[in-house]
Length: 340
Image 1 (cartoon, rainbow, N blue to C red):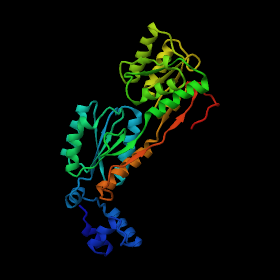
Image 2 (image 1 turned 90 degrees about the vertical axis):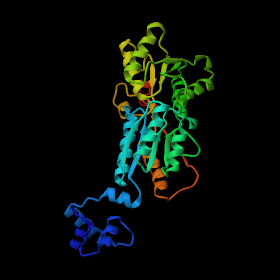
Image 3 (image 1 turned 90 degrees about the horizontal axis):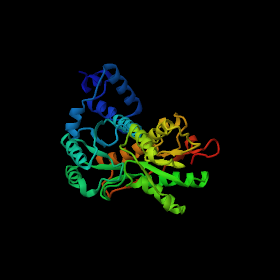
Image 4 (image 1 turned 120 degrees about the vertical axis):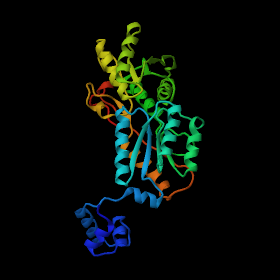
């Protein structure tokens, strides 16, 4: 196995200079760095991460605790975080949860693996400080910083905040104000949390509180959404528009409407949330709202790495991410509504 000594011998510099050049230290000249890196590549040098970790008391691994791992929106974010971790010399360990109980277990497992930091998804906003603060407190005691994204858990933890109620509120207002629709329902397995709240607020603000209603879905998949809308239409009339919890469910709703002989947007307008890539490729193209997952990944990783590297040790920080709306054919926008 190639060592720093081998590179030093080939380049004619000291082992210490080789080490500092490979770490891109400022006191090493650009030409020396280039020569050392070229020699390292020629000799096939691979850094000994384990030895480096022991010396610095780090594992050079970061734990990502996610939910809805099969949702394309989460997949794109996870890949962006993986690339960032790799480019910074870290391995990304991924774990998934479906309940508060599972999340606590995931945190304990990540701590036992000796990760240098934790990134956690709180997509539904249902996870409270009380539910698993003991695990996070244990991580903090062990010197493991945490960053939560989507919804805040505690004012003691760095947070990338995404207010999904604004997404559904704006989408619903668009249906009301731009398309003069009134009979608008929200489709989801649960009518709680922030996404239905935004829909409800838009309806109330428009004087349509009496029209607020929900289409219950049996689960979170496209198949569940298709099944749910078909069952709903067996006994009740179709609304003018449906606001869906996310894009996957909106796509399932579109399939269910087609099955029932109902056209979109002519008979029923449909909008989703997340702006997954598929939304722009189905027919009709799906109107939706979403954040840029690359920006979320970059901001979350920076917050975490600053704490790992000791560059920041102050109070918890919060970054509010902006979102974009994409009005396409599924809500009736064909060349007359622009993205915001």
